[in-house]
Amino acid sequence: MQPVAAGAHFEAALMQVAGVYYSS
Image (cartoon, rainbow, N blue to C red):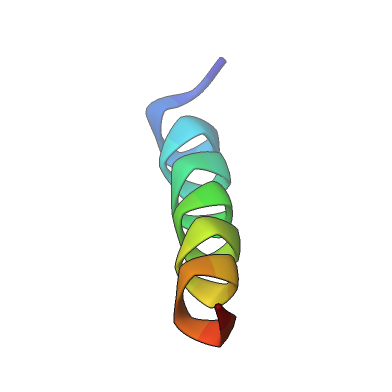
């Protein structure tokens, strides 16, 4: 896996978690 792909996946997961935390 390329570092860029891993970073993008991590960013997407972080935004998803942040969205759930922000909405609650």
